[in-house]
Amino acid sequence: MANRAMRLRVGSVFSAFLVPCFFVATTTPCAAQSANVSELFGARVEAVAGVKSPLMRGDYDGDGKADAVYFVKIAPAGDGKSVASDVHVISIYHSEALSAQSSGHGLAIVLNNGQKFLAVDFEQGAQGFFDAPSWADIGGWDKTSPPPHSAKRGSAELKTYPCLGKGTKGDVILLRDEAGIDEALAWTGKTFKMCVDPNNDP
Image (cartoon, rainbow, N blue to C red):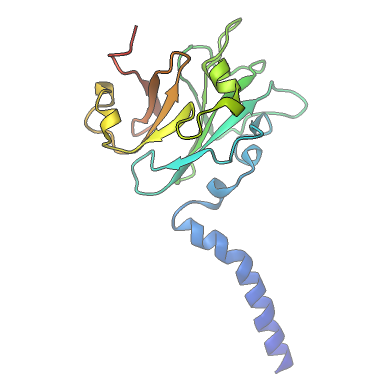
């Protein structure tokens, strides 16, 4: 009897460790819940200190489940540091790919289905979008509307972005540039693309 009670207690403790992962699996994979960005994206990618992690959540791919966005710092490769092989890298403006020498800030996006995207902007000898002063000054971020923020699917603020099309299924990530203009990073069904409000496009 004592042995049976002991097995029940051990089983309960073991289940206690399993339940959180099993529970979130119905809404978000355990990996997507991890606050350790480096475990998800590789040792070259770290969450920026002083910014909540994840920075924001939203249903960016339109599957009805929450996805996560992190503001990250990307280090050059070396000393065993690399980007995880299952990460999809998106160059949002400049065509230069993420190289071994690239370093700077970016956005790490984890979809509920486990897909991982790293949005970057690198160009030789030029400042990247995510390294502009308005992004670098974390202490000066507008708490109600920081440089990276979300817009709900179908919201009025997205109606000025015809490039999103009528088929936009999910929430949209808005990225504020140095001129104070919000530019949209939206899900296409396969990846994320940039979309600029033509009323603000120079």
